[in-house]
Image (cartoon, rainbow, N blue to C red):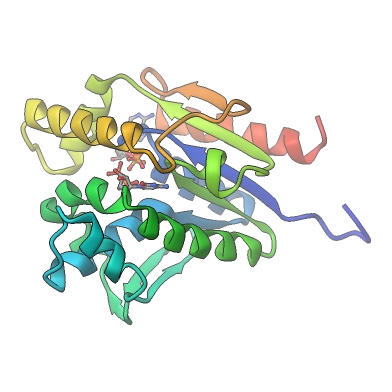
Length: 228
Ligand SMILES: Nc1ncnc2c1ncn2[C@@H]1O[C@H](COP(=O)(O)OP(=O)(O)O)[C@@H](O)[C@H]1O
Ligand SMILES: Nc1ccn([C@@H]2O[C@H](COP(=O)(O)OP(=O)(O)O)[C@@H](O)[C@H]2O)c(=O)n1
């Protein structure tokens, strides 16, 4: 605190798919009056643009050559986050199966990561009260100086059950296999893989309710702010 003005607080939340990053980050940001950034939505948006514009997502050099073209804009209000590409609202289409199956290949391309990382850092730097940023490499690469880093985990069974519940009863086995495949691709890529930062607090959410996870993270942020 300087001159009675609180310093913006930067919270990084990483982890594999279905561990609760989005739900937790939105709720924590809303409760604490912070901005919220879903970095997965940005990688999904650039993937959607590649698919829509006929770029071969199996060809890293074609992806790299097009990486600077789409204009990706994220709205960071936690109760109503938005994502547009060249002015078009893509919040629906980016969740479709076709994008989900291609996003790991697109996000592994270094030119894509450099472009999106720059956007993320600019958004975080402009957050007046602070921001909760969720993704795969926020604590390790995007915001290594974050005030608080959380790494969420959960068993593949719990994650698949959560995801298939969301996808209105999608087959549990297929969902689990797809999720494990995406995690493996995200964890093994060369540039900025999914990883826990050495100074991140790991929270296993398998047997916790969403409310318990939110309370845990809110407490950790408040302790940081109090200088504990
Ligand atoms: N601790 C939890 N217990 C039960 N369900 C949860 C928990 N955390 C999240 N969920 C549910 O699981 C689904 C996936 O959560 P989400 O926040 O989108 O995960 P991620 O962003 O890590 O992929 C959502 O439907 C969410 O409501
Ligand atoms: N910081 C990030 C966030 C997401 N991603 C990529 O974007 C994909 C979609 O992220 P997401 O957060 O929307 O995924 P889920 O919510 O489906 O788990 C991931 O599988 C990664 O390939 C990334 O590479 N780095």
